[in-house]
Image 1 (cartoon, rainbow, N blue to C red):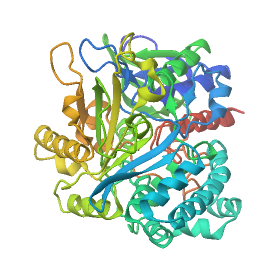
Image 2: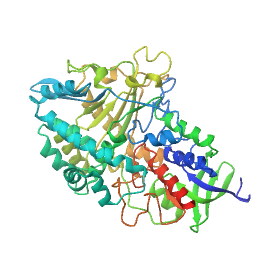
Image 3: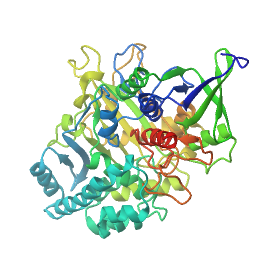
Length: 521
């Protein structure tokens, strides 16, 4: 369509074919609405994609987002998705050296094994009992809060009454999380394992008065009402492929290679100007749903830009010819890497890394965590690779804010990657480099993405995986009924920057669709 053609009218135009945009498209199309999805890239999925990043190697990795916790079963059922997740039998393994001896903490494999692992590390039952009480509390909160994510926003007081536990409310919603961690646990390693869920993509100290760490922690422990993080069978792209198929089957039109550049609206009807291979085109809609960051939304509507966002993570994808052996002789690598493998994430180490990064320096001991998708779901490996013992590794580094890469993104990336892998190598009986596969061009199968890389590739503002600081899951002053509303009556934000956004959840997409259907009802 050229700019001179008569624009086609739709009930809804959705900007961005990431998972939230596809959820919204599927719900609205199934409700009989005419839907157009505009995607600037040549494929759907956004950050929730699978790809083959290594030349000549048939391994389909979850390139950006990689685990599932916050996706409600309700969305999978409502949309009839052909999508499954698989639970990990091991929750985590954290290596450490104690009294000159390599050891570690393995959480999972049954209550008795976990209790014994705590006792071996800490010398008694105190820390394990504290762990059970603490996560019993977060589990109760999860069962009460998670169902509210696909309902109209509760008020703060309503959510507090629903949780019905003043200690839990104070711990998670009012005091810096570090207070509870230090009061509840005595062992530095155990404290660190607990705190890591508060720091994923979030640059904050345990005692940050903003409580950014609390909000991040909350979203990491409420998923599914259990806090479990599961492996998407077939990789993360299996979810967005299923969503795109569901949207198309319901009648939605998905146009890739179409970049939205402007939204003009009077609050009742909107025109979306978008760029195509043939020039500019216009789509008219009663509602526009923006599955992009609040920064992108402001640019499209001409509104004032929100506060700058900043990411704080290193994402590394690897393919190995074999799993490395561990220095800890009592732990099988197939168990250690099946869950979350914590590296340099003791409580004091995390505090030091944060202080160094806040001072503008790369952490001396960069904290990170690793997991092996193919141990739980080998289907992402091509024929023969699994039988030969090949595996994927996904690493997520913490406390590396985007500002650290401003001087020279490529050089700092390489420096950080070397020091991060050195921290891992300190717990291995053989260098990781000896286990890396090589691609068809003879290069090691490893790729690293900084916040600046994510900003360039995915338009994540500042490389922030949540688009901006996570919000509390209750109504904000001046906000709307669903947490997706903007100052324009018929323009909704359905990306991760919406209230209750962040993570692979589909929640903002669901809630934006519900807001549209309510308005029409």
